[in-house]
Image 1 (tube, rainbow, N blue to C red):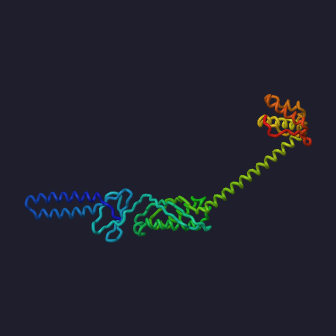
Image 2: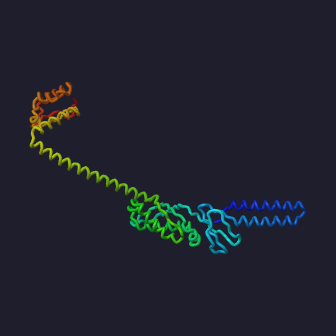
Image 3: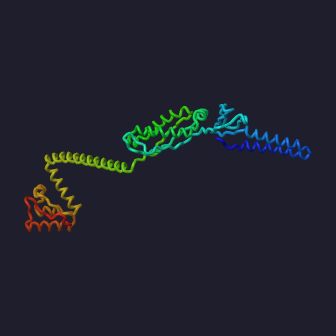
Length: 324
């Protein structure tokens, strides 16, 4: 790779300027031949000096070949070469480099076509091998990464690929590092950016996930109902052995229903008898404290039903949903 050498250009200008000034002085003194000779000599020295002086940046290494053979690695900083005999075909960057690579329409182990994007982080640790062992190390590492990615995809199930990106990244790093180690390149890490699947398969997977969530919801609901039933069974045993507790619970349920919903409900006569609320006086007593208007409505409904003789079986029928 040929690169600009501003420092060499500065040297060329300085040497040629000094030689030109000397040639101009000799020319004014009348020695034209000497003046031309000095100018030509200054031009040659400036050309050789500018070509011999090189400067490498802190992160660069220059591969110097002498007559086609490897001589040395130079840099960073100022160094010299022998013009004509020495050449610098490569300037190797030793910093961490990122390379993006993809695998399009690659089949997974379960024959699902996917598009995978990944990023490779690598650096040159041996510039001599990178320059002499492979023609174009940047292109070579790109192709090695892409083929390794295709190999890994072909050996991995789609589910494992979607859930275990870190594992795939580790496998890729190991494979690529083994391939590029002879070139003096060290793979630092591989990051899988994205895994794209066909839209039809994406919709099917979404429906499957939704069905699985519904199944789990139904299982949880059934388990909750089982636990509630067990608790109700335990409560029934307690009420069976304690009639007073059952009596208080029944009164509380009726009171709360009338207070919160403002609704007249159907109460079996057996429950009313248990709570000693079978008569009009009992119903009126129950509604004390709920407001005189609510009490009057309940009393009126009770009298209306009793006058019309609306009785079914052993229960007292009261219109459901009548607002109080």
